[in-house]
Length: 281
Ligand code: PAF
Image (cartoon, rainbow, N blue to C red; front, top):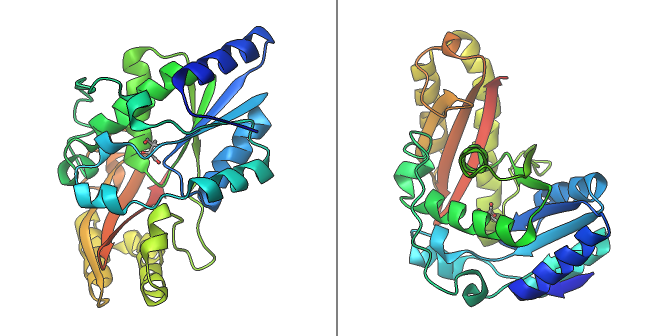
């Protein structure tokens, strides 16, 4: 496994692999890797001749400076983890490598980034699009892997790839959960053991809500999910939306779409946790 730090090193490596006819798979990450990332990496290794993983905590996608400062960083541990799995190349650039000049590009994703995370984290998806398009340009992958935990991010990356006409196939991967049901996230590292137990009630409520949806309206299901999660001391819902799985626009009625997803953000103490559940697929 090679750990490359500069754009030039990666471009030279990719050019040499391409000249040998190798297919390139890519998993972009912000590090502090867990089993969720591992599922993306394993699929990437199966599907492609070469698996490239980037580790870069992208400052342009953090609308909250404090969150950026507190974001966990574990490059040494991540490197060991990826080596044991059989990753070929790690790209771990500095900020100057990715943004030699400030990135002033403004993307227009229509309505899809005007809801949920787009409302609560203004500028977040513009930053994600900046870094992912830049990384795609450097790595030039055939396939790139994204987790469904960040449901809206995945939808937006798909729109971006279409808008920019990029020759990359986006491969979605299901949420990986702890045995307790808690969705794996790098942010879970910031939870204390009692908070971790508390946070289990997020996924538990989402799973239960599938039953509630059999008899309740969309509006009442939303209310019950929010009330249930908020009833746990230490959990606070930022938003819960039930939306069309493609457009991410809210639905009023269960019959409005054939693909319906519920997306939640909950603060567990100071830690912002995200999860989702599919009601109809
Ligand atoms: O999902 C993430 O970890 C990040 O948003 C991504 C896609 C690596 C871009 O920084």
